[in-house]
Length: 199
Image 1 (cartoon, rainbow, N blue to C red):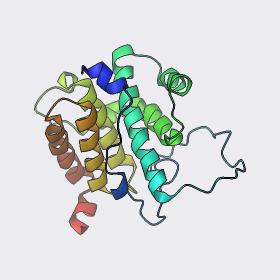
Image 2 (cartoon, rainbow, N blue to C red):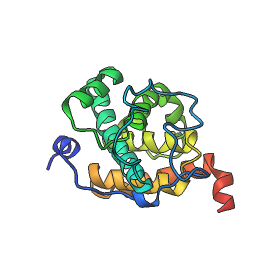
Image 3 (cartoon, helix red, strand yellow):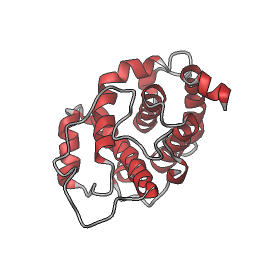
């Protein structure tokens, strides 16, 4: 299966959703608490329904799917140069994202292109090649991982690395997950040193 088909096919469930947790609350906030950015309100939020509130496990699965969608969307952004808002709208119109954490997907797709230079500063002296020589999948996964390490302190650093590994296994080249893990481990020790030392 080629890369495009891999990225845009309906993928089987993978990832370490069950390991992901939020400090203090027991469930994730809508967006990363430290980013200071909030997505536009969801018109369906707060509307009364007959269904029960989703379980913590269901929320974590939605977060995993949001990361997968973000990898696909950031891949598309790298290749097409489209406005990230247009890419998000295309996903909503053309794909079934009802089981995706839409707010987190939207946050990643909006904030990573804005913060990309800051994120890639963390790769200086860490990777063994120019950033533009990274594959688009690995680059997208590293962006997500570094964004979460820098701006989402409520996500444990090991969870960030585990999710990045699973994303790379799902979408990336064979054995690329080892490279991504090594890079993000170094970034984590730089930006999450206190958390790691306390573990």
